[in-house]
Image (cartoon, rainbow, N blue to C red; front, side, top):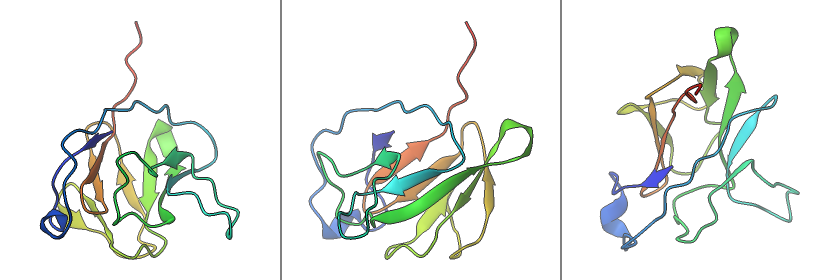
Length: 119
């Protein structure tokens, strides 16, 4: 994952540096967001920072395994929406995603899916 200025980033101070993180996708679902003790939520992709993107919801999006080894992305109702490859997706609209697809959420967070190459 890398951070990048998005459509709402002019309203917030963009961090000068955000390290890239590589996170393997595995399991029945991959929740993307920030932890919440009151909701007993610990997302598999924790975007709580640093730097913390103020536009990311606690449960911002979910990746579900799809047929043939692909994934399906769903936004369960995030406060600021989710954009896949430049297109805003609807709440609870399942969108197939795969290698090279770009998921923009929050003010500046960008997730790029990459299929792990066998060596």
